[in-house]
Structure formats: structure tokens, C-alpha cells
Length: 406
Image 1: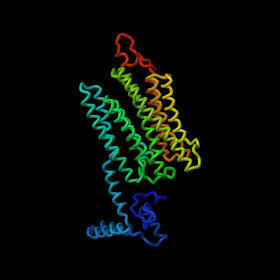
Image 2: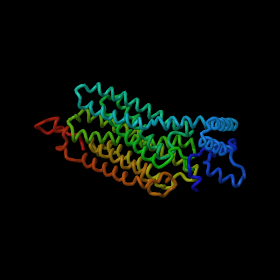
Image 3: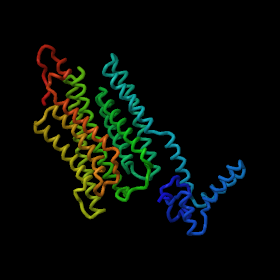
């Protein structure tokens, strides 16, 4: 067990034509040699290089290295070696760390644009950096796709990266249309938070691990998983736009009637997008389950979580269409969507049951509870009486301001 889990896997398969992925570490290879009574040529080459290095014999080291490279070429493993170079470049470039830094700067520029006397300059600067951050984010995802030979979402780590990417893309589109820094701040916030989540998930080990059996289908990874993950992105985007509505309305005088109406349209439109993608993704997941396990629906926790997102977003839309909620009610329900989505995304994995519990992480339980508590607090703030809203008091000092519907 210890030898199988050890890294790095630097011993290539002796017969790559049958299994190109059967790389091993030196310990496992030496254990196998006890059975085959033949030491792997790569292990012999590494041993000779190590001995030459210890003896300070540079020429002998280079000769051993050249022979090993020739052996790899004869086995047609050049593609794997080139892939290793690209992975080295990816690990040292650290695109998602760079993206996180850019999103922090974009967030600050967006906030400054609301306070400065020349908001257009700050807004344009922030938008340019947001597009740069999105480009870096996209390049990192494409790097991972090329290295893994898989669609962008294969595990919890890559889902965090892709959820952020989807929200940033939506924010960039909103900012392109409205130019009011709302899209900037939302995109930067969700992008930064999700990349921080991904960074912490990466501390648990290899982020390009062997594909789990439950996910080993590139077709369904490219359809169901991407679609449902974009549903996560859109629901979070709507929720964080709603948070901006509440905080700007309570704490500042910058949420006037026009800004409220714009945010209301943004949240509504993105919720429609989220409902569509969540529904389609859930149906595709059922078809995949039927093909894999012989049943469309089994009330698995992950399946239930996806269904809850669909039902919750549908509830919000019907409440708005039926006039049951106004602007503030819509915002509070959208913030609640953050709770529902975080449970479906992470909470179901922590239950430790079901066919989809491929990402169980009990260490994240505290942070999930903290996030849920923060969203409940924001819902409480969004429900405060209108006399506590600074933006509404500023609209008509000395007389009651026309208030948004609750």
C-alpha cells in the first residue's frame, strides 16, 4: 500500500503499447522485480545516474541520461515526456494564483469607481483587468484539460475553478452591458473566493488524480457536469448580486431607483439562466445514471441536491411572477440560493453516503457552516425595516421615500 501511494511516478510501463498510464515509483517497480526477476531499465538508469552524481562524475551521469532518453524514445514515450514539461510549466506559472491576485485588484477598482470623482477611468481599468484575469483563468483551465485529456470538471478542485470561471464570465458580460462596476465587483468576489477554495482543496493532494469510476466518461463530463456546474455559477452570481443590493442599500447612499432596477433585472435574468442550466444538467445526470446504474433517479444525496437547486430557483421565479415578492424579497431568496447551492456542491459530499460521494471532506464542514451563517445574517439584514436603509433615506430627506416592494 505504501509503495503504491508513493510519489513520484517516474518509472514508465515496460510495455507502453498495452497501458501507457501504468507509471510506477521506484519502490513499487523494485517490488515487482522480485516476481519478474528483472529490474526495470529505468530503475537501472536512475541508479546509475544517482551513483554518478554522488561520485561527481558528470560525463558518466550525462551518458546514463542519454541512454535513458534513447530508451524512452524507442518506447515511443516522447509524448509523455513533453506532457511532463508542460505540467512543469503549468505548476510554476500558477495561473490560478495570478488570477486570484487580479480579481482582488479588480474588486478594489470596482469599489473605488463608486467613490471616485472620475468613475469611468476606474471602471475601464477594472474591466480591462477583469478580462485579463478571465483570460488567465481560461488559460489555466485549458492547460489542465490538455494535461488530463479530459473536460474541465473532473473533481471538487476543478469544479471550484470552473464555478469561479463561469461567474466571472457572467460578470464580464454584465459589465459590458451596464458599465456600472456591479459586474466587476460580483465577478471579482466570486472568482477570488472560488479560487481560494480551489487552493485549499489542492492542499489535500494531487489535483489531476486518476479519474474516479463514477465520473469516467468524457461525454457526460462534457455535458452533464459542465451544465450543472454552470448552474452553480449562475446561482452564486445571482446570490452575490443580491448581497451587493443589500449591502449597498443598507450602508451607502449609492443604491438609487435606477441602480435598484438594474440590479433587479440582473438577478432575475441570471436566475432564469441558472434555472435552465440546473434543470438541463439534472436531466442529463439522470440519463447518465440510467446508463451507468440502470435507474434514472435513486434519491441519492447529490441527485437530491441538484433537484433542490432547480426547485428553489423555480420557486424564486414563480414568486416574482406571481407578485408574492418584490425587489427585497427577490434579493433575500437569491441569497438563500447560495445556501442551497453550497449544500448541493459540498454538503452532500460530506454526508459520506451515496454513489456520488467521491469528494468527501469533513475538514471543510466548519467553513461550510460559517458560509451558511453569513448568508443567513445577510438575509436578516435584507429584511430590516426600510428606515434602516441609508440609500432610501437619502432619496427624499424629510419625507418618506418611495420604497421598493418587499
